[in-house]
Image 1 (cartoon, rainbow, N blue to C red):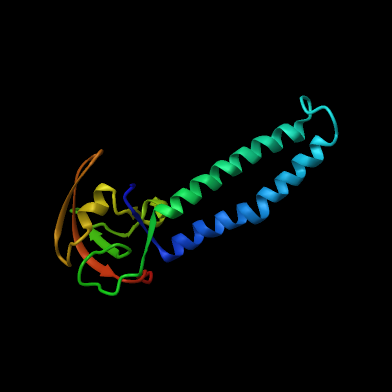
Image 2: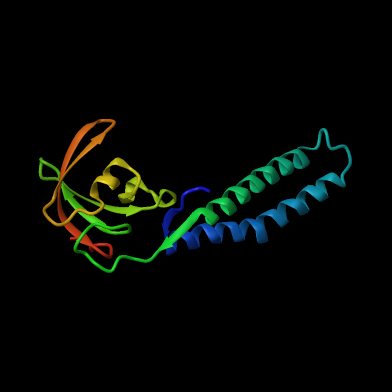
Length: 161
């Protein structure tokens, strides 16, 4: 049996919505297009038919992936405490140069480097889990060792200053 992975309610809803759209909208539309193209005759030189079949295979692979992925996910409620870093916490960290960055600890399906959403399985995510305000964190990354100090923990996205 595979280990469960974690996701936020919003992340689960996004993946479920994508699966629903593929099943109820995209796949039926492509099936109709393929059927219409097939009715035109010679399929070997029918670009619409060939492309449609390829798109149908892509959709079916994505449906299979999403179905299996959603079965392996456990929805975690939003954090209720800012006393320590937990899954879905927003964490402000300061590096030795005084630069402050905000990370959110999320599941692998929700990572977004530009937004600061990092996986709980990543080196930084693993190092931050369980930490409290003013804790020092040393993280071994592929780029070398990084040091941070936890300067803020939030249950919701901090407002921009």
